[in-house]
Length: 280
Image (cartoon, rainbow, N blue to C red; front, side, top):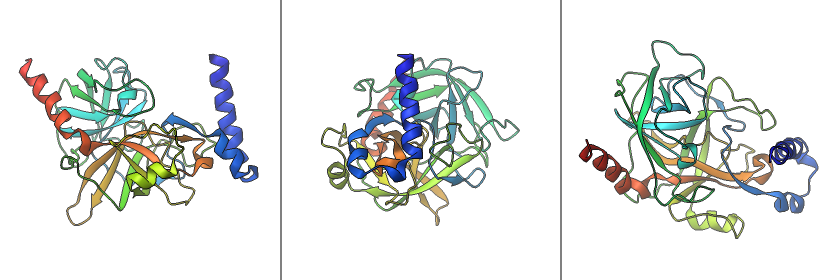
């Protein structure tokens, strides 16, 4: 198993480095659906605290970033199901810009309860959503704020923004220290489905985005991180999607990135919270 993982990593590195020398037919045969790997390819540094709702998740309270997530209220974080193995005891850090800089702006919390969607199958596919409850509420400040949720079943279009800690080049396998962002466009569902391979595990509860052939890849954005619609006139953002999966190697695929469509899960989010509070 270890040898297989090493070979896969080597393949992605070599394939990306030689992208300009591979014919499109060869590339098409090698595309693999995969979870986001924690990188935003050819993104740019975000403005400090321009996404005050984003959090960094770790497996334990001793922080080591594994996934992104989004604050939806003082007690709850929304993320991807595939980021979660044992939710209780996970670490959550809000207010970060530099991934390893903890200061008076950051708030560290510990998860005391978590739920993975009951229909999530454990692999690349639909229902990739989870909710985490923190043992101590977040204190909302200029640097830590919730993101708005969409209306149930709302379908978005146009420009969106992805945030996550990543690196600017697909062949560098080290996450950047600074929060990255990339601008993408929503791809209508049927068009997205037609663009992807016939066996793609796309579901109606997904939403797709694309960089429109600008060689900017969102498919490697931080798993669990936010895809948002930003409203300049309101000064806030609405959570459209949760980073789920895409086709690798991203630099070669030039295919839409796939997210969990949050508007499809508004009743589920409410039910999780209601069930938690009823059990107290």
